[in-house]
Image 1 (tube, rainbow, N blue to C red):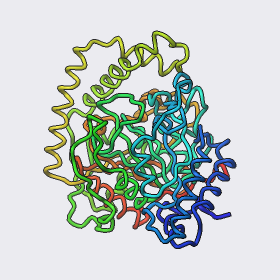
Image 2: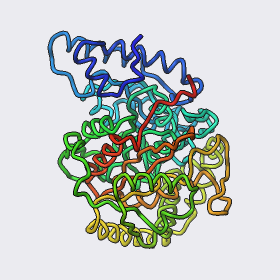
Image 3: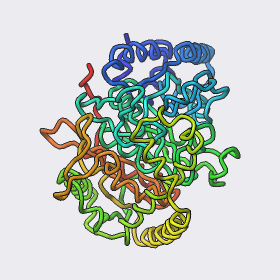
Length: 467
């Protein structure tokens, strides 16, 4: 049986194109690994075996005929179960949605990855309705950290982090409203990309907070991350928030390096309220990049509070009817926050949106001085499963909302970010660093991440806790 799980998506594609292996062998090996490890990891909620084997057969037939294959030919991927997958109900991590009729079409990003040759193998566990940072689902169980099963995977894209970090798939898709790509990437030790708001279409996915929702990829290598991102770009009139921008490829510039880039660390708010490991990871990355400058964004704490308020109100408004009819079918932690959000005054949202515009303007001013910003991704390594509180700066705080303390102010204004994992010798769990750039400059964030990967400063080894 091929060792597909040890390979990147691009390595798999190279083997399939050359005939060294077949897409069918890759798919069979993937499902064998899912069957063996998913009972411990809790990453998958559905598999699409018949579909994946049919897709593999088509790719293998095309190769035999000498037809050109896509850049991701034969690479297995999976999606957070808020993506529409034809033939599956779009669960969004909930009890209620799984009773819905199956989706009649795939979410467009799935179609685009498959057009590039990748093979969808299933749908992944997530926090209920994406309102979660822990990866613990009250209906499907927790997705586990692939490096230590006793610790959280992070949420709400926890199944995506667990599946990629545990080597079940080479690629996965998730969503990020306040940090739900970057938090699992940090805790599971993989790369995650939250693109600029409006870059990738969200049509065909279950929403959480429309003015904050992003979709994006996870991978164990920066090259895979860039290849997947490039494949998913393109206009879609079905998402009214998508920006009318042309495809802007990033893969070709990955090896350009960081010479000439103005790179700085974010100070102030981003240097408080975390365990030393978070700041040590930033220091290690900044040192490797020779980023000595420290800059500050003003009023970050207020911006995070405004983001939290908008999340509660928009999320609550989306769920009002379901809450009236089936409140007891929600995870109580999710239900209570949605109810609270639905009761908040609209005038508060108006003020929060004003602050949002002001804060974005300050960030854009900062990007007139620098090209790349470095900040912690999470305030700590992965907490233990079921852990409700942690102590940061001497204060006991709730885990669930505060794992996003550093990610929330960034997604609030839609900036693109690569989360990159840093490892400390002697530690079994990683912690991530955010590489933040100006809107539409995903290429720069990926270039920096790749330079760090080449130097061994960041890496994404497969977790073996479930093996």
